[in-house]
Image (cartoon, rainbow, N blue to C red; front, side, top):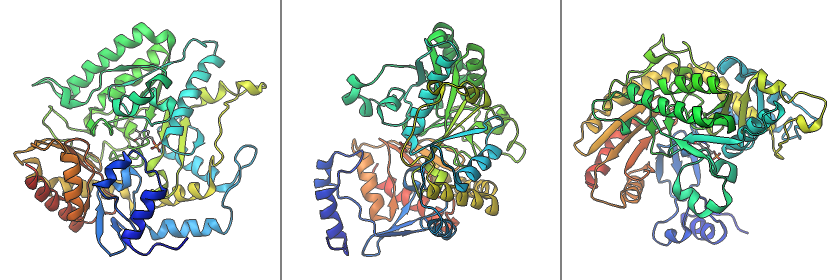
Length: 467
Ligand SMILES: *Cc1c(COP(=O)(O)O)cnc(C)c1O
């Protein structure tokens, strides 16, 4: 096997040997793969030196740029000490330090970290742990789950049972357990004149109706806090989470906060759950309004504690697969007993991998050293300012923003808008990956003002070419 030295060589050999994810492979007959030879900062480079701005952080994962020197150094150091050891019956420093750091940072009361390999495995762990908790607590009939309409929690069979995306489910329907969905508070669905907060409260009432009827068989409600990514970057008012927390407690149903995508600062606070409980934190005031950057006082004020908090994607800065399920003392204690079968029975070979934990620790160090959350608020304000022409563009609808995520719909005559936008983006040095006619930006946090300007200007050119 020879090494790869050209784009063409990489593409041909990839199509012959690699079955790419989330892809109809035949489409690559007309839509070429994008060859990437190396990356640095927000930029991905091919063998010819053509570069693409990674506007979607390689799907949420990258926070501080590709090949970040500080994360590289931490990993190099860890490589010389311990690359891996099994976590069942053994322990090591990176996994302990990371658990302690997260306990300090996370909403109060989430003192126990269980480790998985990726986002979907975190969902599986939370679902199993919730149902097993009820079984250990003398309520074995509580085995059902609910999720929001258009929810996304991963694509393994258990995770698909709480994922409401027809494309991902339909072929596998016979293999998936049916769970109910409840109304999504996505403010694009609000009635004319109804504020985002009022709509969120109306959706919370629908949740209450469902809980009232079905709580006896329900183990947990799983939710993506503030932003439903795969639903088309659906954003909603935090008062929904606050009500969901109260209602779940009232009806004896666990609340699982899936912060796999929105955790690690992406929502504007370290964890999106921090923004619930302080409804002054965001100004949404109506379906057309834009969420403003958070005020100083809003940060760290209030917030809710879910029964389970799921982290993955950005946790290692985009370096290595890792996921974490954080939970409470109450849940931990329900498993603490003499009998093996009362213990939580779940493992992955790479559970708590030291390299991945070390990358996560280096990522948390950068947050602290660079005052990232604060700096990001300035960057978000800058991007909002320069995005004015986008927001006011006659073909742009629902321009919206939460933390370091922006999204809007484009009114276009092209049924294949997403594909055209992707291709035109590449030609202009942008990695844009629209969902339908929804365009979104969620760049690495290290993006500079020049790069943000480039992003906005080129996106406007692309939209003008597609209307
Ligand atoms: C990406 C994602 C998952 C699944 O994570 P994987 O690592 O892709 O398995 C689950 N929930 C949410 C909200 C996600 O964005």
